[in-house]
Image (tube, rainbow, N blue to C red):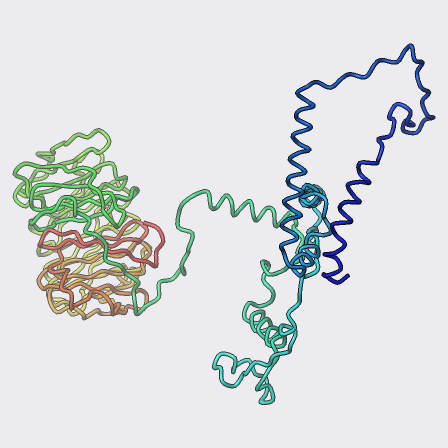
Length: 555
């Protein structure tokens, strides 16, 4: 019906509707038929009860409601007369032919919402996908320009140019371009991803995977894992806050070591203090500091269990043992049978059973770690430059001042082998790898020879696997990381003289250290964290430099 005609006839229809509504009579409920039964008979007049009269309050409420409804209807009619006919027609198309009351429209909308909620509840209860439970309505209008098959230029766009299959596809329609983009995406993803499937039904496996994801997101941790093998060339490394930033010092750092079981680093210096710090890479809060009066620390080391800290001085024969569990500092003034005037350099066996003290005149003294009792001594020619245990704690490697290396059996204290470090005039440092594969020897000329450990036990003149010649001064520090993928070498005689060697390629990482920054200075001690996540250096300026190795996810 045209809008002009509808506007003329609408007021009459409303009037007629009101008159018809008033003329309707309510059916007699007492005489109505029951559900499924015969009609009831009217009760005798003697048994009939007089109808209850409505109260005055109820009558007043009914009159007020009727008056409000009449006012709302009058206002609505006045508004409709002012609106154009096109707007009234559009409203009827969208909301339906609701002329009498706005409550009808509200009840209709509320009913559709309740129906949709019931449908969704039924679908969840039955576990059946119902994608079309919402009411599908026809669009109010359709833009004809949207239906035009517009062509897209493919030649002048460098991203679309690669999607052309032949030269004839210089222009494509929007639908074809959309299909082509879907094909490119599926080709790159190896098919349609699970999240892009519209009609995929949930299975029990999907529910289990979602539960696993929920459990995963309820805890914190490192979820990204890296490759098992460390690549050579460039090392992903980050400079962190100094390990001893909360207790700065100007004294030389003599020892830096990570706790074997906790995320803690120990820093000892010539200022008579041993400090423990919590390692987080940002602030590294201080846990505790132990001050030893008139005791400049030459070396400090954790026990294998991490329950004790051992410390020696540069001018004393006293060995201090700090019990971390009891919080007691125990000085060991004299070891029976040990006639050394100074106790400086020492090593702790990996299994925590033995303590090896480097003496003068070529002596090596082996003590029990638990009781600090001397169980035997070993003698080499010349002076002892450095010593270390094998990874199984059954052998001792000692580098002498004349360029030779001695291998001793711990249980029998007998020399198993003796070989010459190739090209060395006298040794300065020695280290063994955790996996028992390599032995590294550092000499005064700056050369580090990497040997196979088996050849060191059997040959008198073993050939090194590789000679690292990146340093030009004496190599005073050697350290393997726990995974035997990195060998750290350093010299305390030249600034920035530290290198990280990749194993097994025996090549130096090119991006460490950054020579232009000049932040490392003279390195006196080095250590890796238990799982190689961190690397620490101690220099003569009193700074314990801390680095994060991103290849390793754990501490």
